[in-house]
Length: 495
Ligand code: F6P
Image 1 (tube, helix red, strand yellow):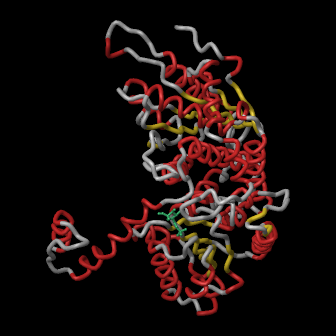
Image 2 (cartoon, rainbow, N blue to C red):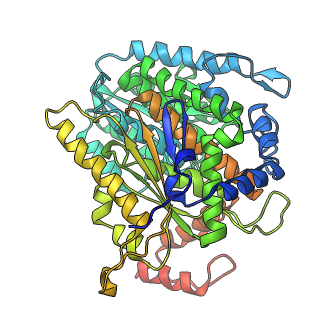
Image 3 (spheres, rainbow, N blue to C red):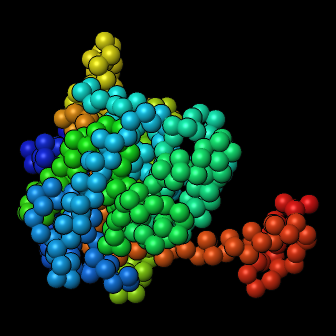
């Protein structure tokens, strides 16, 4: 076995008790120096300061990206255009805590939202479900995102209408999937003999568009606001994370915020050379430059984090999947394709390609020191889980020679190891904030605006005339908004 890497002593960094080990990145000391020099030349430190200072770094939408204020448990002032946002943030915390104490006899919560209004809370509810020491109120938490009625049907089959609460979560309150699903759930309550006042009392909204929620019929007292300076994919820290507080208690929600806040303080204050989000961003940049990587994988060796890669896909690809930089010029690099799922299951799926495929895909292995349940088998199973995690990284790094070409592992396949001391609300918060800050760092290094998502809109616009054509059910010809291929497909569906 070849001996590598030479920089093993300098490869581990710790922040908020989360350890990052870059030993298998195959980046030597001189290359790290170059990378940090590049980061300084790219004015990354100034960008980080501007991010936390509420500067309008989201240039296209002329607003800041101040999601860090939502987890600023120190309550120190966060100024936005001369006004402290913390009083409004803490008022929402107070209302969330009060709501937690009020909800008794609730069997089901239907959380209706999509994208950033769905992934974060869904991930947190799953991740914390079996954590020793976290008490669950045992409500059935249903996440309704897809416009496909299969999801709606599955949820409505299980929920008990008389003891259900409905939370509509949408930053814009105009997302069609969400408003249509909300109307369907309200119709179901009505069809199940819930009275008008029962329905009104069961209906809640979390939004940055309070007038639209009001217009929809949500009572003022049941509307939990957040603000346009919070991007949808960065919103789990706002009242979007309500299910976490409702199911696991306000204290758990606070711990979640507190882990993220601790990671923010690290990102804001640590020198670049010790800064976990920055180191991870630079390692990825290095692999783009040297290996031309086009994809990377995040593999949590924690079944409870199976939703993490889905959350991360939106974070990274919606933030940085862009080909134009902040000055409107073509970029050299942008977000690689992100994928992943829980290990060791992932090993039995696409790891063949990761070991022997013709493309190199860097991996973030995410492991947790302590077992993640208190089952009697937990210690023995956890040991095997961790051995698998470590073995995969070693095999990828070193490869294996063999006489039969079929058995050769090329090796030199980079990976990080991220080690959390345990999986709880605090470290979950720290993990998500680590990746949010890494995405922001990458955006700064690529000179990309990580806080808008113009590319998601066009498809939604085109869907409207197509829906109309499907509604008529009669054959159509290609026109200004529907091309010949799509017209033929509509006709196929209508036939
Ligand atoms: O699909 C794009 C998007 O705008 C995401 O950025 C966002 O998280 C999601 O839709 C949902 O938006 P909203 O919270 O406004 O309903």
